[in-house]
Length: 493
Image 1: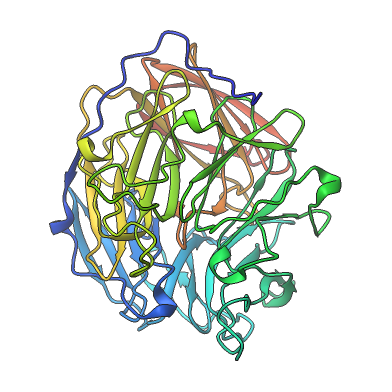
Image 2: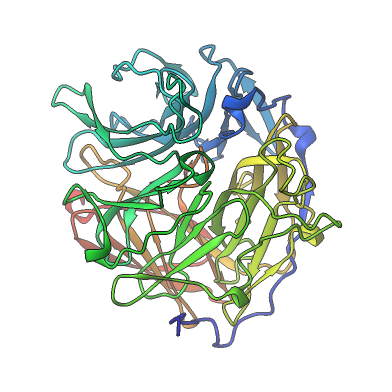
């Protein structure tokens, strides 16, 4: 029997019914477009590029130019010029040079780029990445010392393989820094066409690179992969790692049980697979009854299987339980899969199951959605939603849910190269719940966030926050609800 500990059985407020207001008209025009090389991708990076605490938006454009939109407050967004970049599949914020200004690692069909941030939403090109012409679709980063990050790039189909595209998956890359800050590339093989990768602590509580691969192109012989970062090897049967083959699109990771081990959501064509972390360091597939498989459209009469892309756990109603958003959409015109494929907003219930709420919440768009992010764009403590669609306009939704719970956000800083403490774990304890989140870069589908970690608190008006820093040091803080918090490493005080 699968062990799925439910920590929310204690007295909790009634679940607020989520409601979102479509504010897409506030966005300048932007469409992720292109041919078969942009069937996948379409990510969005959400981060603060000018230090005003309001999240800004970088959206991949595919064959169209990528766009940067500055948050001017009150759901007003202003376009800012960027170096002209087409072929962009996605982007991830990461402070590579530890200057306190977020940079962007930009994934492309062709040479990837790093845009170095200035702190005023300006960006410079010319960062020395190794020359490459791959079709990049996934990214993650972590720190192994106090200098520059190690970065992993997932590459999709090898476009130069004359026998492709099927069974023609390219090699992935590990980019390691030299003391001078330049990067050297080493191949990570075998590659099975990843559409998401994530460096995080696994169920063993070891740093591992999880790679979610698309069976559409590896066809046979491939599977989901786990690469132990310290040992620099793939896990296998000797590690009780079960090989799972699916049409992997996105990764979401979050501790849903309060045991300090993250559950993992893998989106796919067909079933969306959630793996529940076990005390022995392995994973077990969640029971179908949990409500997260989201295998067919929840609106309309199209009974064909759904296609999941970006997935993200976040507490939409601030009740202390992480909910789950899944972006859905047909690859293009694949006849065996649903065409009218609405996005999912799965609200976690007190018993640990999830219930669909996207339609009543107003976010069940049936465009071909790809990347997405849940972020508080207006600073009111409620997470809003942005969605990138293929061959359709960018969408943004304001969270106007009433009777939501209390909340807090946690930002981390420390001296040295890993300025934002990537790899830290933040644990928040109230009388009703224990929650933890890892501070990571990667996952999702072709895009991610660099924002303070958001926690819903339910009725609690105070909490104990413990930060386990990347070097193992801990700091504990007694805090009040409904506030943005910033903690520094104890060594820097």
